[in-house]
Amino acid sequence: MEALLNYTLKVSIALLALYLFYFLVLRGQNSFRFNRAYLLVAPIIALRLPLIQWPAILAPDAAVSEILQAVQLGEVVVTGYRPEAMAATDIASSLSPILVALYFVVMAIVLFKLVRQLWQIRQLKAQAILARQAEGIKVYHLSSPYPAFAFGKNIFLSKQQEQLHPQEREQVLAHELAHVKYGHTWDVLLYEVLSAILWFHPAVWLLKQELRDVHEYQADAAVVSRHQTQKYTSLLSREALLSMGLPVGSYFTKPQVLKRLRMLQLQGHKPGWVRPLLAAPLLLALAFLLARQQATAENQSITAAPTSEVLPAVTLPDAEANAPSGERPYTGERPYTGERPYTYVEQMPQFKGGDVEMMKFLGMNIRYPRQAQEAGVEGLVVLSFVVDRDGSLSNFQVLKSLGQGTDEEALRVVESMNGSWEPGRQNGKAVPVRYTLPIRFAIK
Image (cartoon, rainbow, N blue to C red; front, side):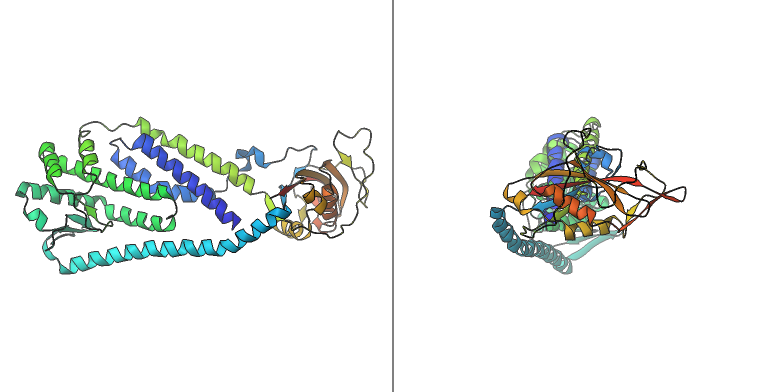
């Protein structure tokens, strides 16, 4: 559930950023093709970016600086809970099914509304009279006084248009033909589905309305390219702003007429290209932001419940005089032979079953010491060890200490992995290799 909420948060941030960029930078431009493409891909980009696995080089905070020359394993995060947080965790766990159920209920309602609108259009088509047909486009006449609208390759005209001058009727028809030729219906249906999936985010609904406006601007531009702009603007000004409650259609008259009239004043002006280019830095910034978070999320997280279990004691001898400050060398049961270990070999040592099995092992065995939780101790313990020629582990060291039993617990678990490693090889021979393993203890 936590991973899903994290993903939803990232999608929400991306959606909000993409909408604000459009509203502040692109909205008033007459680059209709680019604006339409931007609005269509914006929610898809927002949904996709958090799923992309970026190299860790883009996220330096996700790595732990090495103290020794060694192979760096991924950071393990051990999560514990303060006593007062346990009750909140239980409440959150009980609310999770309710929230999931609420999400799907609202999504079903939005999809049902879409299906109902499609059924209403189907009923209108069955009752309408086919007036003409050309190039696969059908024009129907309705007996009801609805505004003209287009859906798919069908255009619906009503008695309202019969009262217009023939030249004005041609302008209305040209407007709806533009909707059909541009394929605006499929844009609308895409956003209806996206609205059902992301119904909880206001930016989706705002982006959908912006796309509707761009559709009208494109259709208006197609009309004035063949008819006089002054006569067409006069027609728009006189048309009654009537809505029939079927938002999946593309209408000739809608409340955004004033915006359409303002946009018609830009006809003849060459579309600018500087502002659309600014979308590239925005996408790079979002990608970098999500890449940093994604790389951090790659650190394995293990939740450790509070425990009163008596853990095996680990004795740490006094630090050697020449040991770096803050480090406490520790020698395991198998003392290190003294041969200088490698930091990179042709065939690296591997925990039996791979990294996934190693993380499972750590998750099943590591515990957050109760004394550390009660004292509120959080931070990083960095261990170092050598995978020897026979796959055994030796030369255990605490490179970064945290105290309150966390060092002993980290050493206990790492030592228990002894005998579960396959040795590294160089030129076909088994050789010792040094590893470091960062373990972060964090309290929620």
